[in-house]
Length: 232
Image 1 (cartoon, helix red, strand yellow):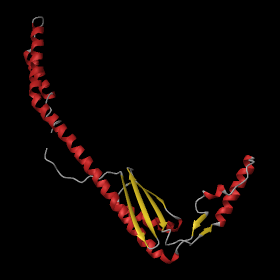
Image 2 (cartoon, rainbow, N blue to C red):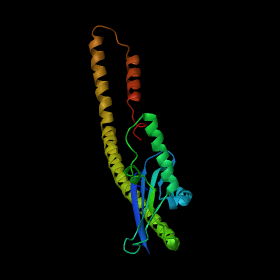
Image 3 (cartoon, one colour):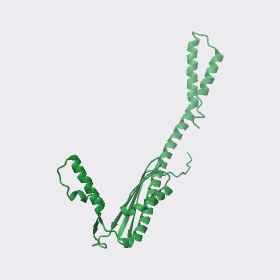
């Protein structure tokens, strides 16, 4: 079979990108799986929430369909930012405490509300943001995000190459089977014609055979046995 080169891309893939900036680093991961439409979900630090719309637009421009998950992690250099401290998100802590009190009252729980219940709640206690390098962090994100998308696309192309080779092998196998059927087709016709003739000869010893009708049946059998259209 003459190979016609086509580009296949897998719908499943993973890509990551990382960029270090003054004071910290950004890590972006992008995962994709097969999906009929375009579906994008984002897991972002709170200060990146304003960029979600742009993230969705960028992914939609690069890919036509699929389910995508974009995960952004931002970390700060401990030594460089040592001593910058933490801050309490008091409104969030108060709201969480109010919910716990309501839960305790409704379920008639005897346990006291302890500090340990707050430590695992995201964004109640957070490290202070470094406002002075917001521009550097944004540039680092753009670079890491672009690298993650490039990495994802390379993986999808690599997986697509594997799929292409597998499909090509299967097509070659099918074509070999078709060639074998084409070769055997005339032999099959002769086999059935001879078997019909033997059967008619046996019946001719008992019944009178209409030779014209017999020839018509043989012609009909030959027509039904023609696989030219199906195998082309």
